[in-house]
Length: 290
Image 1 (cartoon, rainbow, N blue to C red):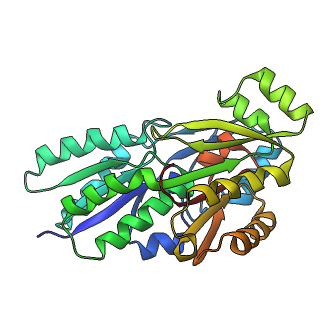
Image 2 (cartoon, rainbow, N blue to C red):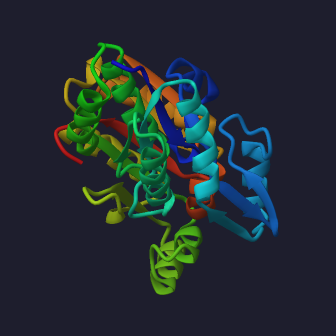
C-alpha cells in the first residue's frame, strides 16, 4: 500500500505548528490589497495578520482569488514525484472555485500517472472549521488505513464539524453580498450582530441576530451546548479577526460552562477575513449535526 499525503489550501487558517504536525501540503489562495497581490501563506510571510486587519480597518480595497490550476499542478506533482498519493481536503465549493480547480488537476494527473491516486474531498468547511476537519482526518490517517478508507471517513465526518460565527461590522458582509445594504445599515444603527453558521451545503447562512457583542458570543456558546458531542473530551478551534484578547476570555467562558480538552486559537486569515472584516469570531467543534 502506497503512502499518501494530506493536502489542503490556506483557507484552513491553521497555525504553522499544526501544518507541520499534520504533515500538510498547502496550496495558497491569494488576497489583493489596494491592487497588490499577496499569497495567503499560513505563516503570514507575505502579509502579516495584524497588517492585513489594519488595512481592512482603513477600508482598503480587498479582493480574493483561489489557487490556479497551475498552483495545484505544481504542488501535486511534487508529491507524486516522491511516490506518494494525495488526499486533498478543500475549501467549501459553495464559497470558492478552489476545490473545483483541485479536481480538474487531479483528474489530469491521474491520467498522466496511471499508478497514482489523488482523491479530492470537498470539506464544505472554511477557516479553522476546515482546519478542525483536517485534524480529525489526520488522526484517522494515523491509524494506518488506506487512502480510500481515510477518504471515506472524511466524507462521513465533514458534516459533524460545526461552524458558528459572528461579526462586528455588517458592512463587510454587505460588500461580500452576504446581506443586503438595507440590513447592514439598519443592523449597524441598532447594534445588531448576526449569528451565522455553515450549512450542510457549505454555505454561510444567517440564522439569528443578537443585540450587542456579548450577546452574540453567548449565542455561539448556546449553539455549542445544543449540539456538541462529549465537549469535555474535544479539542475545539476558535478563529478571530484580530481580537485575540477578547477570544481568550470567550474561551474561558466556554471552558467554564461547557468544557473542552484543548483549545486552539488563531487568526482568520486574509482570504476569509477579507469578507468578514475585523472582529469576526468563529467557534468550531464536533457535533451531532451542523
